[in-house]
Length: 364
Ligand code: PMP
Image (cartoon, rainbow, N blue to C red; front, side, top):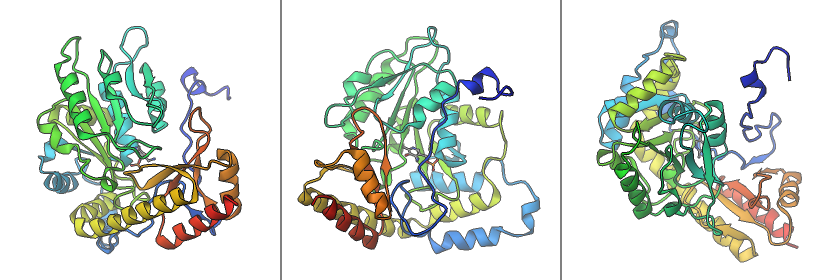
């Protein structure tokens, strides 16, 4: 606490990101980064952009990037917003579409076990929220979201569980919120697709044409191996996109610098490279999941680039510490229902072989 902080800052609960160790030597499976490098074309584009033009501001509209994204997703650039990581896009979306003030506004809904930044954004913007319990097997129970609310946030696949929502459930939710025309404004459904590239048939963007209250949120951090570049984007109807622009332009007109825009365009254009890389991640995930099951671990079926696992012999924190002592960093959430689980990002085959070896010893 500081006497210089205002009341808002004193009462914030900031998000704590996974550890980025300064010293090397760890097998780093704790923040869902892609274990493979970005496309060489991305590095080339960034190197080319790192010239004299850096004295000039970047394009505040990110038009080249939005055009490339629009082409890739078969939408118009007016249906695309680009931001500094999907965290920023999500923060802007909460500010733009969800009504603040508990008592006056209906709470927004998101799963009780999910990306822990959602409650942080909601508190920051004073948006009331009600966490909706997942089923015992960590599935999202879609019927529980179908009542009057201030809006919905659904990550697909969910994090940290890795479980995907059946397409029919997503469509039925969107239909419900389409019909819910009561109240002063239409309720928005935010679909966070940070990990959708690692699943089968999860892409929600085509649904924006039929559902004007759907905003899909994407990131280049995982599927495009660019966590270090900070690029995220959203796809939705132009009114939603303009809402995001109004929020952004009330903070900072230039959220994406020249290097980020150049690298992101190259990444979007090199889809074949990333299809190969991510296919490798998926194959490793499936192999490691099967091996862990054979060793007697509980493994939640994952459609993401991480797995959510439980040792039947050790508590979560003990399992976490054992792995750390062996130089393997994973993520443990000390929260009800999931304190005995660990979230393990999928690394290279060599890293995961080492991880499996340590898991085998941990069972002895
Ligand atoms: N959504 C989910 C579900 C995530 O796990 C993450 C990564 N922590 C993000 C969004 C944010 O990713 P980024 O800001 O790197 O785009």
